[in-house]
Amino acid sequence: MAVLKIAKLGNPVLRQVAKPVDLNDLTGSTVQTFIDDMIETMHHEGGVGLAAPQVNRSIQIVVLEYAENERYPDEVSIPLTVLVNPVLSDYSQEIKEGWESCLSLVDFRGLVPRSTTVTLNAYDREGNKIQKTVSDFEAVVLQHELDHLKGYVFLDRMKDLTQLSYQEEFEEFWLKKEDTASS
Ligand code: NI
Image 1 (cartoon, rainbow, N blue to C red):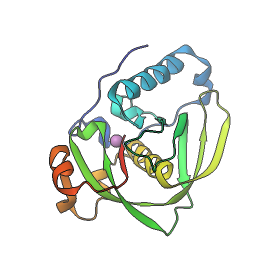
Image 2 (tube, protein in one colour):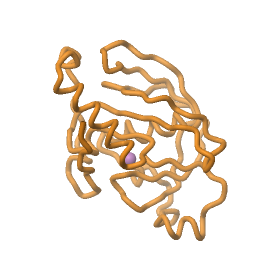
Image 3 (cartoon, helix red, strand yellow):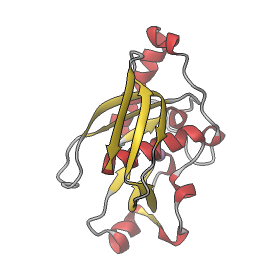
Image 4 (cartoon, rainbow, N blue to C red):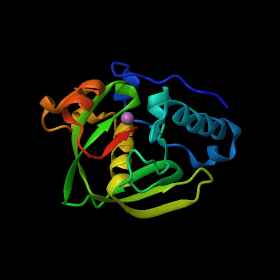
């Protein structure tokens, strides 16, 4: 396994629409090794999620994992999840704003409105179908990661860029007990 280089804002790969994965390729070692590398990279960087374009591959794969953490006692943990060709639908009308960050935007945090519930359709790394409705923190992480597959970053989803902050200033001026996510 290997830690992959993170593509940062300004790299055109982050603005491309990622291509679907041919499910037949999941039986090959190339894609499986890449998925293992994505997981290792997410762990190494301390992210809650990682999308393939963030490691310079414009294909529709996302990994996420969140272990319960005393810093965010209100968040429910997310088991290690690999999503191939994921699609979201049934976005709830109910919207909640939460602070997000992104490995591709390094030090920024911004307040982003997201639906509180979404339905996920995807495949796992073996090509089995996944369908489930997710809410709250996991729904936010999914919306953030799937945006990467469409060429969007969280800045594009902010309503008010005056709520964009560097991490240090975020901690000094903005941090309350708000939801945070690095992905
Ligand atoms: Ni991100």
